[in-house]
Structures are given as structure tokens and as C-alpha cells.
Length: 332
Image (cartoon, rainbow, N blue to C red):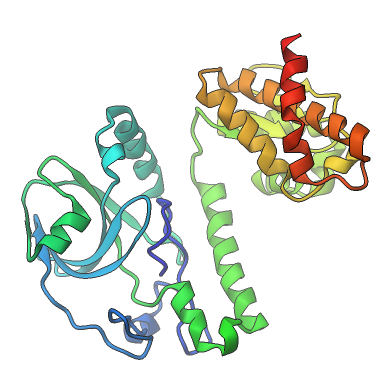
């Protein structure tokens, strides 16, 4: 399990050295290798007491990132081993962000899939004690804070697992299996999790087909109906990308953008669109308005770039570099 991932849905289980990647429910994981500090997949790490967070005894640091740090711990009440994940100080000091996190954690805790670590509880901390200052500074926990308690899946991170192969290149059959596990988990999460309101989704026809449990041909045959269905089911603003991009929100008629050109069908173009919409939304615009304006700015920037450089050679950077002119046109 790669505990360096910052999302609530922890990364799917990764195959250990035995070539066949086990799922988190398989007994074979009990013998999966663990990593000692500075060691490798064949080294068993000792279990040292590092501190106590209420009933959770800290045993070993698993990883960390921008979101927080993760420790392996033992629940002294039930006796099970869990993963304890701290929250970033800026997050836990913001009441609105914490309320949003509680809602998201409640949604994620309902997911049950062999390639998704189960979210158990968002635990309010009452008592803490640490074996040394290093652990105290890493965890930065105090009474009143929260920690995320999740299933612990023994194993190694993806980056360490791949070191066993020559030049770190994973054999194709194993790489395909890893991707299959990830795709399976994502497909399940999209199908079972209630996305909830206050979201802007930007699917292309293939992603829209998966959301609707249909095929791309059916989506393209009636794009208006498709974007309406996704908006109603997800209770979100939906941007259905493609030729004549559509923007829709439940209870409103879809809006079509007539700007844009075929040259914009290039890698990274969708990322530029998402960035523009997110920037507008973050400045206080309503989600639907931000999506509509963002789509128009993106398409117009693409047309300006194509006029100067030609459709055939367009790359995402060209679209981004013409956004300034598109904004000026929008102000006129």
C-alpha cells in the first residue's frame, strides 16, 4: 500500500515480490514484506513503541506527504493494526474545511472494495504522548485534533516494489495488473460513491459513458441527454467535453459552446480547461457560471492559437499562452 498518496481513497494494494499482486483481503498479505528504515523489501522492520494517541499505540512510520503523516498503530481495545493519518495544520484549523472533510470521510467510509483501504473513523484526539521529539514534531497532534483511522494493509510502496526489477522497469504483465487494480477501484468508487452537490465534473465522452454505465457511441448519439443525466444523477455542474462542449446543471437547460476547433484534441488540453474553471470558481463565481465562462475562454484561446499556429500543431501550452487574449475579449 502506498501511503504517500494524499487522497482519502488510499492507493490500491501493490504486488509484492511474488509477482501476483494480492488484494487487501487475501491471507497472503500477512507474509508480505515490510520496509525497515533504509532497508529493502526483504528486511523485516522491528516493532517499537513510538507513542500513544488515545487507544492507538504508534508502532512504525509508514510515510507522509503534503496532507500529513501516516503511522502504523495498534488499537489496544480491539487488538487490530490500523493506519493512522494526521491532518495538515491548515486543514484542521479551518472549520469550513473540516466540515467538508467530515462529509467526504463519511462518503468514503461506505466504500468496500478489495483494492481500496477502508476508512474506519475520523477520530477526535483526547490524549497524546510520544516517545521522542521527532515523532511529536512529525505528528503535531494535540487534544481536540482529528486523525483518520484506516485499514492497515501490509506491503511496500510502489516506488520500493519496483526496485526489485532491472533498472526499475516493471514487466508488462505486472504493470497491467497494477493498472487493472487501480482502474477497478476507481470504477467502483465512481459507481458506488455519491458524488454529492457542489462539484464541477469535466468528463470526456469515454468518462461520461462509464458514469452512465453505457458506451461512447450512445453518449455521442445524444450528448444533450447524456449531460443532463449526469448532472441529475451527480447533482453537479457537468462539462461534457468534445466538439461543441456542453455545460449543464440539474434543473437547467444545457449550454453549448460553439467556439473551439479539432486541433484542441491534444494531450493536456483538458487540464488547461480544468485549471481555468477552478480559478474562476475559486474567485467566487457560481459553479455553473465558472464552468460556462471557463469553457468559452478555453475554446476561444484554442481558436486564437489555431489562427496563429495552425490546428495541426496545437499543444496544450499554446492554448494556455493565448488565455490572456481570450480574457481581454471577454471583458469587451
